[in-house]
Length: 468
Image (tube, rainbow, N blue to C red; front, side, top):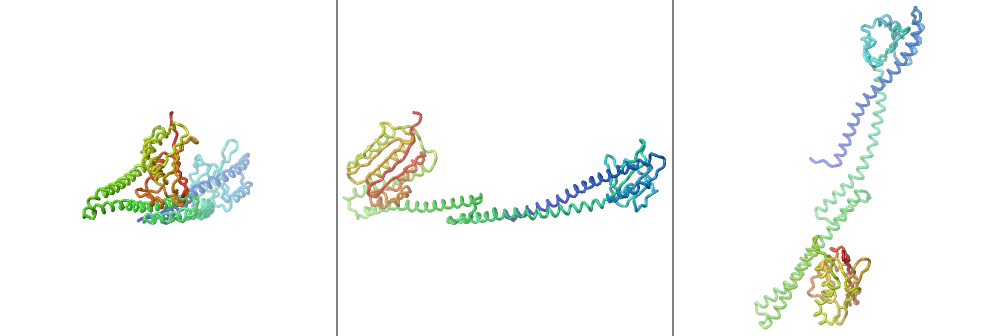
């Protein structure tokens, strides 16, 4: 059987109250009882000593007369709410406060040292009482002799009654504090239990696949932070799920199109629809489509490798030289379209610290894109410069440009603008995704500035070479 956190907290709270009450009842009772005994015995002992001191004056002569001291004995007994005796040195009661019935009685087994190192004794005072009493003794001395003792008695029931009165106050105070402590329970309920139930309900919704569910919790404490974190997590997971669906759809589309073409041409060749003299033409189309599939597969593998950490192999190299070598690879296509690659460098040699192969891929993809979307007889500008301890590389074309609503989407995998779909029949939609992944893996940034009908400029940064 499972118990909720709230029920456990309530159980712990009630257990705390019960154990607290038992502890207070036990310790307070014992401590109060002992304190009252000490307090009463000290007061009685002080008064008994005063009486003994005044009685010692009686023994200055040979005649012993307690009648003159009885009023003082009675006054002390009344003040302390106790009974008072005067014993001679043999233990016989010679004086007593009224009502008295022990005068002339000898205390059997009387021993003034029975209290030991205490100033009092608790008991029936050598069986002289039917109930326990608190008794103190003070010797009556004179001329270096002990003539008797002043004994004060207080029933222990009186001490217990006083203790109970004090404990009643303690119990009432403890009860009030326990009721006030319910505020803690109320605070826990509102700040922990209810928010936790909402968070748990949200987690169950996420587990059931409802990633659009939002936890409504308007607090700025740790619970609110946790709820906002879970909401953000669910939002990101929801975006990832939508991305995965889009990814699968795009992959399926981009694979299906060339496969359909290949299948169609091969079937047409086999059933004789395509005459033999055209085989060469359509075989070249099939090869082109397979190259497109191969390029798409390589792009996906590249992105997969970029998703893992630690794939970079950095070194110092001349970025200007890499740009020249990469641009040279496009000489044929540029000549065919009469496009000029204008290279502008601030210095002859510009060393950077990066992965040479990956940066070559970035430059290849950016220049390739610029050529695809540039008009014939146009210029593509490639520049490098140093600014703020960073190396900036710019690839700028004067082509079709990118629509404003597509600027943020061009980095998405498989995304193609409407313009690109009309021009780039063989593109995979992975080039700019790969570019961004590589630059970000270097801890750098890439940005684009574009105007439809004017052109686009891609700018990325690289760290300067180290230990030169």
